[in-house]
Length: 98
Image 1 (cartoon, rainbow, N blue to C red):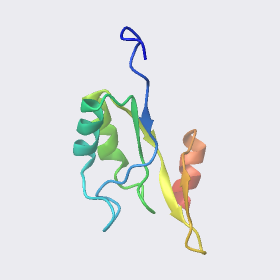
Image 2 (image 1 turned 180 degrees about the horizontal axis):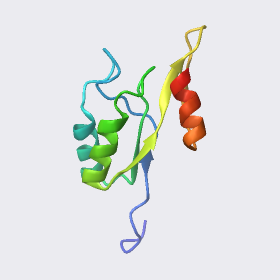
Image 3 (image 1 turned 120 degrees about the vertical axis):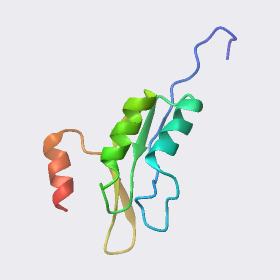
Image 4 (image 1 turned 30 degrees about the vertical axis):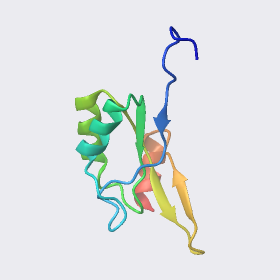
């Protein structure tokens, strides 16, 4: 990369917070603070089977200037997990009903 080139833009699209029981350890405040230090443009919170951390993630995103990408992980009957990212309010509502 040329020395005067802007830094590449990056968004982490899979991140677990402590709202993923026994999987994630860090609070949303900690995750977004580190994302800001690392120069990330955006961070997706994709907790397993829960959207409970999104209010705190939203607050942390506002405080740090790192954009929140709303997401989640769903565990399927065969044990596989799928990452989901609702794109509008209707999709978010459907995700909440699962």
